[in-house]
Image (cartoon, rainbow, N blue to C red; front, side, top):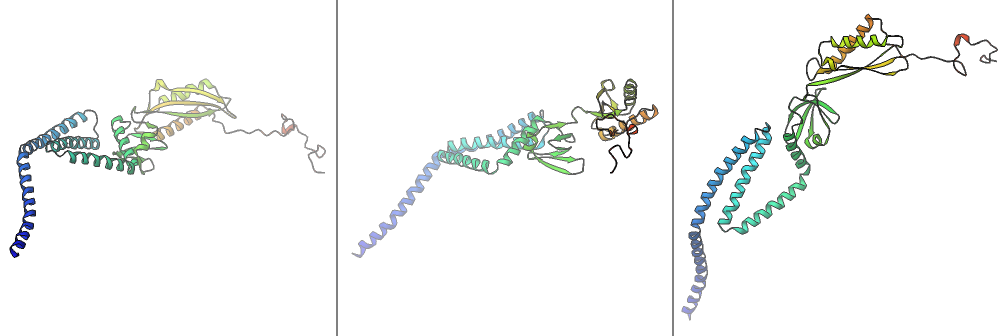
Length: 311
């Protein structure tokens, strides 16, 4: 009876050992069967590492011909490198008969990508806008630009923000999506800017003389370019003057600056008018004391019986 109990206990211990032994044997057989696939996978891994580096170098070489944006170059080259490595990883997993792992990995990547897209949509918008700006190149570093209501010099830019240094000495960080969605005025592309200056002369001056004098004065002013494209036009009969506008071109951005050149033009015109006795009139107001109008003060009867005095 006691021997039977011992045999029963021995059988209970042998069964788990047999299960474990069978599992190990199965794994060893699978491992032996997969040795060729594993060797092939190692060869493919090395091949894809080399291929990814070659593709990244080729992309950088092509990219530098169209853009000098280092941040964008690094971003795209890294994406291409890891994309090639990802393709290689999926192929290797398939060779190793790990199809379920590939499916789970793809599903996980999709879920994570969707979650990140909702969580960081503003950052993603700035990121995409930065890529578009890098390719379109509406401005370069040190260009003078106007973005919306902001005017200044482009200090630096990256894939998230564009930094503009205003003429008040402040650095403004503008999100790239705001830069892309606003009108961009670039004063540095053509290197020229037109100054529109309005002036008025009295009704008693010779308008032909005024026009010739203004054109001659500005044509002789240092810093004015495209002198043949200067435009002089009389605009209107004002309340106390005949108003005209002179349009002329300067180098911009360059020395002297826009504000300095406009100031020089105002002083030059004023000096020329003073020498030729041409008047820039003050505003004139005429006081008419007649009830019906047109009656001069000297002709009015201001005596006590004219109805205006006190009773």
